[in-house]
Length: 266
Image 1 (cartoon, rainbow, N blue to C red):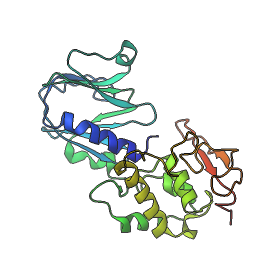
Image 2 (image 1 turned 30 degrees about the vertical axis):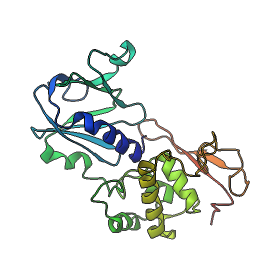
Image 3 (image 1 turned 90 degrees about the vertical axis):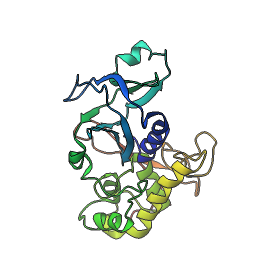
Image 4 (image 1 turned 135 degrees about the vertical axis):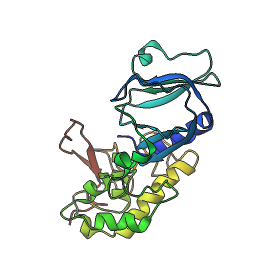
């Protein structure tokens, strides 16, 4: 799964090239509305909520996409085309009035819904630290209401608070010294939510800091625990451990990493 900071930065990169541009020729190539023309619509906004990207048109019918792991968006200059291999994977193609073409490549989720119905797509999501309507009190209240849920499961769940993917869930757990299976009711939610929010914001606002957590730039040293199974903890030297979660209903697996000394079990 992509992290919320990745989607946020993608929107920021696309926004200057898309907003106020008119689609001259284009259509959805996937999803329930496959084949529907996008021609004649003006792009008025590129918005995100957690890991979801919404490209709003002036006719109030925004395409909604979710990158998951394989998806990407790219913009080709006038006269340029995607490589043949990528064109076969294009789920959205839209030529703009300045000659550029927007491509949504290998997107697992492509929807076109009226703006009034956006809540059906994103209404379940919790507060997002990268949105102007971020509500830290609500982001603490929602996981506090969960019972019998581990810290890891609560952070991965997008309903209490949106934007954290597996990378950040592992790194935030390490930064707070929390063992992954710890029940959510046994942790300081104020500090947990604060660290998660600050981590995402730091990632998108600090040059060269994207998804880094240690402050180090050398290969293999940018994360405290992610990708470090069997290697010494960068703080205490203890061997970092890892375990795969059970597969999700769609067959995806996630891996948990932790330092047994810095994140001791209760």
